[in-house]
Image (cartoon, rainbow, N blue to C red):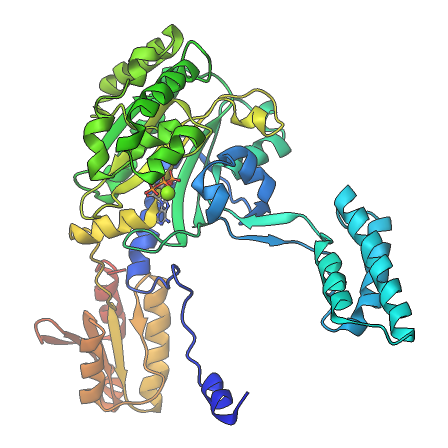
Length: 509
Ligand code: ATP
Ligand code: MG
């Protein structure tokens, strides 16, 4: 590295990784308000909070979300776990030591016990032996280096882990791991937190984004459960002040020949007939996931999609009855909905009821929540047969929509700015700050003495409601000055009166 590049490197300004961002005050106040509302509303419906880890075995997501989905096939952040004590070799001389430690770990079952690993370790040993012989006869060449690296890299030191792209799989895993089927059913859980998907970043689409989600596991699949989950969701959106939200619902039946499987076969046949008129994505999906074609936003495909067979005409009797009852129960609960036969959702685990909520102000990324029923999922992950239904709200998009509609404004302000001058005044200022903070007021106490003019300017900038002025005069007269910054009004009060007056106000934050 040249000196110039080294210097540049030193001065490098770090930036958040593409698709990630800092959430900053005052916006974080809005985030907290939204999350607090979720805690409160969900608690009134009897849900408890779960906080699963942020990474899990890749296999969990592959199995739950589905290997054919975009999420699993290309969007996950995956890495290899490994025992603490092994270090990948950096230079050729390290390989002997590396081989010994890997052999030892393999014997102790500390690294995956696969046939592939057994083979790779054997090959690495052979290659190194050959290299050492060749070295003795001065026949060593680059090909041997390449082969050594190849076999060393082929050894898997640990399981593949992934940052979670969604949390339903984790919640189901936890339900099984903690034998929650022994609790009163259904078990109602919710979570909030970051999810990770390697998608193309754009408005309302990030690589680290946040979801608020809930799951109902076990018990019955009574349509009332579906309706109540949706009712809770709409109650939450109402409470946070989301305006213009539209709820879309659909039923995608269950995986049987007389239901969805039959429909998908028919859909596939219909798609084959119009294949030439479809774009490359949809053409590919005819084979991998025909239902997803219905999800297409491509303008040119819309007229074609409108002519395709619809799932509602192919539901089995049970699924049809279930769906009709979900709709009736929504009506009983006063929840407005629109049916959308093209709503299929992108994750493999869904069945029967699916729903999505859109909100204004978000451009083409206008879905703020997706959800549905997934009765087979717990069993698919190795647990007991269990019903399941849930949803995930995109918190980033919810916040964006609130901000666009003017509902997201959170003025950053202080209740009281204490302008003090002099040592005695400072002691009184500390006392007053402590007292007011205890009552929940936000108080700014400047760490160094400032002229009153400057202090009041600062109070103004911070949007303080009151300035408490404490100078030598105030302390010796035992009369403190309180200035209301909006009006400029000033009052002189004793310490107890002044604190009492403030305490009678409502804290701004
Ligand atoms: P979309 O069709 O918008 O990609 P999705 O079907 O992939 O959404 P889900 O996996 O059902 O979404 O996740 C539920 C919600 O999470 C979405 O409705 C959306 O609000 C939010 N969400 C999903 N992916 C992202 C992302 N990359 N950035 C921000 N929010 C997201
Ligand atoms: Mg997506």
